[in-house]
Image 1 (cartoon, rainbow, N blue to C red):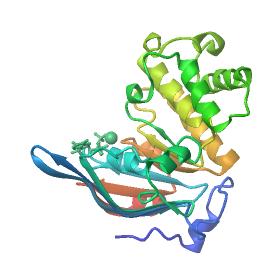
Image 2 (image 1 turned 180 degrees about the vertical axis):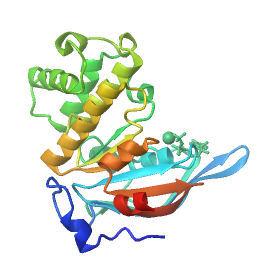
Image 3 (image 1 turned 120 degrees about the vertical axis):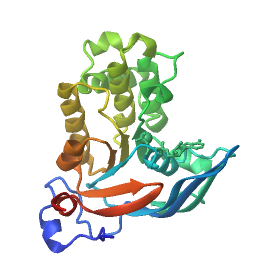
Image 4 (image 1 turned 90 degrees about the horizontal axis):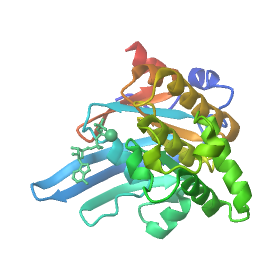
Length: 269
Ligand SMILES: Nc1ncnc2c1ncn2[C@@H]1O[C@H](COP(=O)(O)OP(=O)(O)OP(=O)(O)O)[C@@H](O)[C@H]1O
Ligand SMILES: [Mg+2]
């Protein structure tokens, strides 16, 4: 297995927006993460000993066949696996704080601002009974209690505009079902980015989108990273996206990390 540690030559090639050299303390450090589910058919080892580091300003691409544990890993980092049937072990350090021991209340505080996720299935992220705008406003105000309703709404419209929703000042009052699938996905991306999260996990963020919008979304993720030095995990089947965005790549198979290293090295191989 290749090492995630960068050589000085790699560090020199880090994009200008990289907030810090990848030699300091990682912003996210995952150690021997295991997420097993008790099912009626027995124990499912969805994630079975995954470890990696991610620094601020860097992008990790996670690839691997369907069912290899990519989404379960991400949901685990976000603390969204605290069901009775999930058994989670290992360590997840976010900005120096260990999350598995921290407990759900603390992780809820961190979700949104310190870490946010673009979900593979936009329907899981949006509530059908509230307008798209109300949900983005709510996500914003949780972490910006000082913002007025008007300011929060303006921020929601701005975010919808940035993800390419036409007439955002009108569409902000639509319900999710009034959006097309691609628009819902973009709205969810707007919601994930509204607080400029320090860690963004994007699970297949562009699969359902056409090429132009895909490019917009990837630009948006890059902007976030340049502006705020965010750490980004991008899960995708699209090797073009990985080649374009990722500094490091982690390959998963059967819940395990079977390969990891700098993107240029893995692509050469
Ligand atoms: N709540 C759960 N209970 C039991 N098994 C689960 C649960 N959630 C996921 N799994 C199983 O864990 C494995 C990994 O699923 P996961 O969704 O992480 O795959 P993935 O790598 O994201 O695949 P894809 O590329 O298709 O999105 C699968 O076999 C899945 O069926
Ligand atoms: Mg998945």
